[in-house]
Structures are given as C-alpha cells and as structure tokens.
Image (cartoon, rainbow, N blue to C red; front, side, top):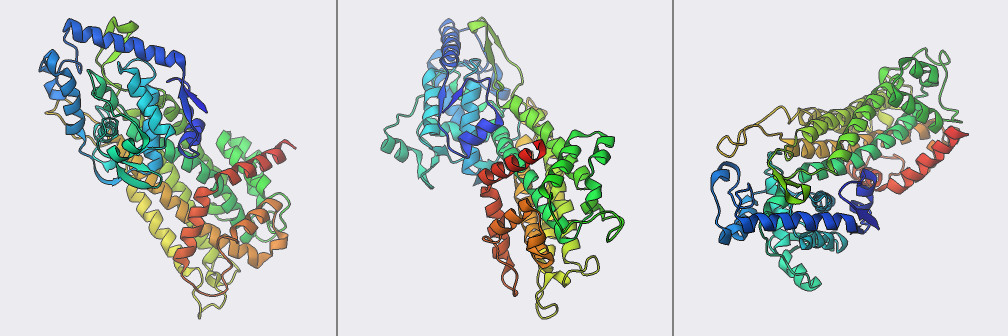
Length: 509
C-alpha cells in the first residue's frame, strides 16, 4: 500500500496506484491537518465573517453575500451547475488519477474539507469506483471546473461511475457497496472543483505512457538499424560527450547496449560512409525529446503535490487568502511541450519506415513484399504512418497560446491546459501506432537479414514480437497487425522494466 501525505506523491506511485491498482491509505499527520483546516471553516461560518467561497457567490458573483442558512445549499448548487462536461469520458485510468490527485491535494490541509470527504475519496480508490467524467468543457483556469464537478457529483451520490468494467449510476454502486454519499457543507464543493487535477491527471498518465514509448522507440530503432545494416560509429560515446547533452548520451549508450553482439550492424566505410539522419541522428532527436520529458516530469511532480484550490487556509485558520493557484499555465505549457516532443518520436520513426520499405533506399525486397508486384507487402503501412504523423502536427499546435475570457470577464485569462493534455494523450496513441508500424517493418527486415545474426537483446524482442505479429508471407489485413502490436506495446510495461534492467546491468559490466 502507498501512503498519501499531500506532499510526497511521485509519478512512479501514480503508475502503481492508477495502472496497477495498488491500494492507498492516508497518513495520520495529513488527516490532522485536514481537521484543523475544517475547524477554521466552521469558525468563519459561525462568525459570519465574509470569506470568498464560504459565504459568497463564485466568479463574478463573488460580491454576493450568502446567508448562513444557505451556505450548504450554495455548495450543492455549485456542483450541479458546474457539471457541464461534454463528449466522450476520460479514460478510466485518468479518472482514477483525478480522484487520487484531488485527494492528495486536499490532504495538504489548506482546503477546509471535513475528514469524511477525504475518506470517501479514499474509498473510491480502494474500491475501484471511478467517476464517469466527460473530457470536454474545461478552460484550465479557475480550476478544471466542469470535469471536477462530475467527480464531485459522485461523492453526493449522483452522476455515473466505472466499476468492474461497466458504467453504472453512482447510487446503484453505492447501494451495492454500502457506501453513504455526503451532503456537502461550507467550502467543500469549491474545494473539490477548484484545481488542476483533470489536466494534471491526464498529463501524468500521458507522461507514464510517453516514457514507456521512449524506451520502446529505442528498441524498435535498434531493430531498424539491424534491418538496414546501420553504421554503429554514429553512436560512439565520444561524439555525444563532445556535445554534452546527458539525454543524448544516454540514448546512444542504450542503443549500443541493445545492439551489443549484433552481426548485422556495420562500421563506417564497410558498406557506406554515412547513414541518413533518421538513423545517424537517433540520439540527437530522441535525446531532445527525452529532455522535454524530463522537464514535464519535474513540473508534474510539483503539481501532483500542490494546493490548487481557492481560497487557501493557513496558520490553522488565522489566515485565509484568495489567490490563483488553480490557474493551469505551468501544466498547459508542459503539456504543449510534451506534445511536440512525442510528435517527433513518430516523425523520425516514419522516416525510418520509409527507409525500410523504399527499394530506392535499401537492398531489401521492395516494400518488404514476399512477391513484389503481385503482393504489395508493407507499402500502405507507410501511408498509414505518414497520415498519423501529419495528424500529430495539427494536434501539436500549442493550446496554451489561446485564451477566451469567462465569468463576465472576471476570469479574463485561462490556460486551456486540459485541451493541451487531451491532445497530448491523442498524440501518444498515434505515436504508439507509428512505432508499431516501424516494428512490424523492422521485424521483417531483420528476418530477411538473418535472425541468427541479431544481437541477443533484439533477438529476444524479435521472438516475443513474432508471437504478436507473424512474418509477412502473403498480403493480409495489416490493420489488425498494427492494432495488435500497439496494444502489446501498451501493455508491455513489466517486460520493459526487466529489459531495461538487463541492459542497465550490461552498462555496469
């Protein structure tokens, strides 16, 4: 089990909780902070001191004073009125991440909720009950208001949830599990929806998938290097140390270790003097994307432990400050950066695919066809990859450069960070399919060169991958192959950890 403190959550723990469904518990110290902040809210309500979000309206209505008898109804109205999300739901793993991140933020003790709100969020995680949250409708400032309102609906027994692979009305699952919904009290509705947890959850899951793809791209590129008898001199450590980027050096080192012992790769001048950029510059291009991913990881690990609602309660209630931590700009920019970085993994991969299938660029069978002319082989696989790469270029346009004022111009600059995160996730799915296509083509090329000549690690991967996509002996519906390969790559997390450990051990040796 993983302990939540509001301060120490890591992306690796997000992976374990959201993808591996590991259970969680709350630290005693964090729950103490929650209780003290709640006591402060109660005092404010009792004293009738005017405080934003507790006894006032919201946004442009912040100057409207709410009577003490209506402060609870105010919170219920807030959740129902703000649940305006539309479109398809966020993936269930992202919904789970939203619950996790909202809970972790509340445990910092700045929000003023009752402990039972935190306990119910904990129950949702450990019972694997995940809110059904529409993807569209957030501006990414003033919090992810619409998505988080759909999350909050579940706490009051309304809305829908994912559970046991199906979608149900919340009240039906709560009844089955003997879970009581809550009646929101002062500040609690606002505390639940003022935050960046939709974009950050989408960003965290995207980063986890992106980092897996980064490693997978190196294995697949290594297969391509064998299929094209690539020149290993370009990966010599001296070249990369001379430039000085750590991530570039790391990629080159991993490629060298993946291809250690290969009899298919060549040396400078042996078959040609230089390879094309898509082969020769793998460390430079992939390394630059890893630089961006490292930046994204740093920002996400700050935000998943951040207090992002408003107002915040400090000094055990003696100080209540209204500010703007709900503004998603830091994550919006990070998501736009990750979009560009991931699109480049696909862009260079598609160029390697072209070199694998184009008979003018290699000495392999044209389009890797078993009977060139009669059978088209991998010809249209490259078309598909090119289409996905082109789509990524459109999706990579930064969302964060846009802003549309809202709430009668009170909220006059917004981040659009949730749009950036959603587009980033779509790009990542496209990248995986492009890499799946490269993998299918590289497997075929390596097979043509001679499996017995492959490096031990790439051969191991080849044998596993051939169980997913068989050799191309005749034309078939390759769409099925692409999807099977992409799904296999997406699931292949534990195997990749083992493989990384294997070549890390080789580096140490």
